[in-house]
Structures are given as C-alpha cells and as structure tokens.
Image (cartoon, chains in turn green, purple, blue, yellow):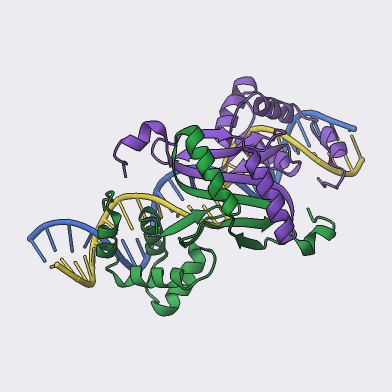
Length: 143
Length: 143
DNA sequence: ATAGGTGCAAATGGTTTGCGAAAAC
DNA sequence: GTTTTCGCAAACCATTTGCACCTAT
C-alpha cells in the first residue's frame, strides 16, 4: 500500500480486516509497550488462527501509518505501543529491567532547539535513560 | 570475567590480547558509530584471521566495561561507539538515513530533573530524534 | 475477476555459543 | 598447568518473505 501525505484518508480505508481491528484494539487497550510475541499471544486468545507473520506485517503497517511507535528498550527485540498525543520517554533499570514511562516539557523545548540548529523537520523524539531504580541502587550490581 | 565496582583495575588487566587492542584502536580512531560488520571489515585489514565471533564477544566486553555505548539507530542492527566524556545524541533522517550527532546542555538539565522526580540513579542518557533533514524535507517522502 | 490480506513454512540475517586449539600467566 | 581467549561452524531467534488460498469489492 502507498502512504501519501494525507494519511487520515488511507487510514480508515485500511483498518478493514478482522485481524487488523483485533491487533489495534489490543494495542489500544494496553498501557505501555509490548513486543510482537506478547501481542501475538494476546491475539490468539480471540482469534486462534491468526499468525505471527500477520502480527509483524501489521505492526509494520501501523508504524508506517504512525499509529504506533517502535522502540528498542533492550538489545533482544522491538517493543511497540500506541502513539498517544503526548510524547513520553523511558527510564530503564539496568538491574531489574523495570521500565518507567514519563513525560517532560523540557524535551519539547529541546526539540525546538535542535530543529532550529540543525534545520531538521523532527517527527519523533524519544529520550532513553538508563540507570538504577530506588530498590536496586542500594544493592550490589549483579553482573 | 567478573566486573566489580572498581572497574579501572580490571580494565587494563583485560586489554591483554592482540585482537582486543586492535578492535579498541579502531573504535578509538573512528568518529561516530559503526556496526559489528564494519568493525570486522576494518579489523581484517590488519589481522586477516580475526573472526566475527571475536568482534561480537569483545564488543560485549567493552560494553560491560563501559568503554563503548551500544545504540539502536535503526531496526536492523546495533551500532557501537567509543564512550566519550560528553554525552551526545542522535538525529536520524527517515528518508536518507543520515545520522547527525549533537550535544545539548538541556539534556543534562533534564537528567537532573528526572533523577530527582523518579529517584533513579541515571548512568546513561540518550536522546533519539527522527525526522527529515534539510535536503529531504522538501522532496516527497519515498515510502 | 482483480487486488490485496492472510497463514504457513521456509529463508534471512544479526548475534551467540559449543568446542577443540592456541595464548596468556 | 590452569585459565582465558580465539577461530570456526553450527545454533539461535526475531523478523521477513514466497506462495497458495481466501476475502472483499
């Protein structure tokens, strides 16, 4: 399928299959991020015949339509989540793996700054922070 | 190998093989990021018998020693670069794939803010921005 | 009937690992 | 002599793709 600058038109035209509606519904009802396999697991509860390939194909489609964001929170796989109105960012604990989402108006200011300095048209901003959470920062770091 | 909190000691103890010194030298002499395969290509020019597995094993080691940073600038593979004193961030063009590195004092301020609000001990901050560069933002977006 | 979506299984490709040989200490 | 690293090939695993079938228009 092609995507032109007037995306809103294609968009509902294309949410036309059972599988797509199901996948998008799951994504919409999930707070935070999930990976392809988790989405697949949730999907087969409702549609036992859906295939993992369909999940991947539609994740790619949703990403192109900018309905979801893809992120790389660890080295193993990608995570996806519904794109919400407000940008939000991730704070990952290196010890226990916990992920905290947060928003920050300072990032918007930063985007402005960079947009101007680098003459870029910025469409997505993601801040990734990593460290040790309250519970883990006391303990010896398990390597 | 084990890594304890006093990393500086292990560090030079462990840069003890020809292959490690070569790989680290290449990383040190490269501005910006490179992936495992590029590093491997550069390495076999000097040491034709070095293997890709050794490259990966040592990238992992360097990462654990915090000599390099690993990042996911696209979905295909990981990129690595020498950790430098100043944090710097990435601005990626969705159309031509160009990556611009930049620094920003505003990010440091942001880290302070989050560190305080979330009670996290933050060890790494990476801002990822994506959009269209000067050259590409005029053209129709090739999907 | 035509175009596009799906399911399945096989392919792809970056990364990791098992193992015997070589190097470091 | 013991421990660690290396090179090679095979394994792994997330993701993609070829193809035949299905579904909606």
